[in-house]
Length: 446
Image (cartoon, rainbow, N blue to C red; front, side, top):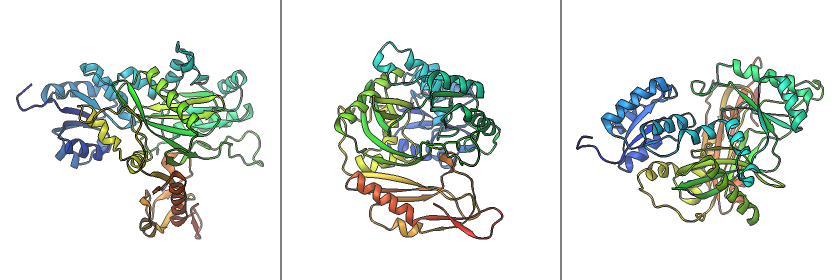
């Protein structure tokens, strides 16, 4: 290593330009490997070097990062983006740099592998966190799984994200139509982040009942600290079935699982919060996570918490902004800072200074005509942000996954109820107006 190099050189795999800005502000020297579709020119001004390549292709990535490691001497590897998590861990393992292993990252990416791992764990308390699951290749497999484990059941991709393709099935009569939805999803060429996620394998798993939460944690050399438990508002659990359409109609893809809002800190009884905290710590130990941020999704069933899935990254949907607003914790900054010991390890849970909530905007399918009320909403008290992701002329499709939402509002409050109330008022003030295909009359969004 040449004399100009420091011991604070990081390899960043994919991610947001905001991450790079925060690393640079901390004095961390870094090399970026970024997918061509995601490159932002500003990154070249912040980084010591930029490699533009498909980092999910190991045959391409391996020689590039080996050369970059020899030239720049990075000692840590990090990613905050879902498609970069396994590649980052693979690079770290390959170069012997420590940190999250590829095995752990794979367990958190591959939902079937995670279920098998938890189900075979020697600790019965870990096994109780999971449910039965099996890979399925057609409608017959769904019917067989339902006969063995009962209904309702959940059909989901093994390694997708954003609630894409997640379907609840309430009986064998829905299996054929549900599998037809799988085939239709696989055939789509318009999926956001289609360069990163191939919709291939699917699993069936037992349905988990109860209110849903996500748990934001940060692990410090094996000590897991819960930063916040977050309430999650999702669509109705029942399938969206027209009673006149016949019993073989599939439930709406993603129905019951699309995330419509979040709020923190969650309004939980102390005993329930303790059980959630203990369960998440047990889960993270079981999958081998020791350092950095994690986002774990679970439901609080009558018999206790059960894991839906986990990720070795900060939560999406701008939960990280809610966390910062309520607790003063910039978890994105922590992710890069902890790599070099630039933040102290927490020993206990942080105390919130206020609450925060977000609700998402949706619109009826059609062409966007105008967006009403956004500027007025931004000026109201307690508003963190009003974000719209469409513009006049854009096309809005059916709400089939988290990526089909058209924006979100973020608010704060003295307590969680107040923050939620403000966020919900904002959704009433902001309207994405669309015109349905073939119609002249403008239609307002929900």
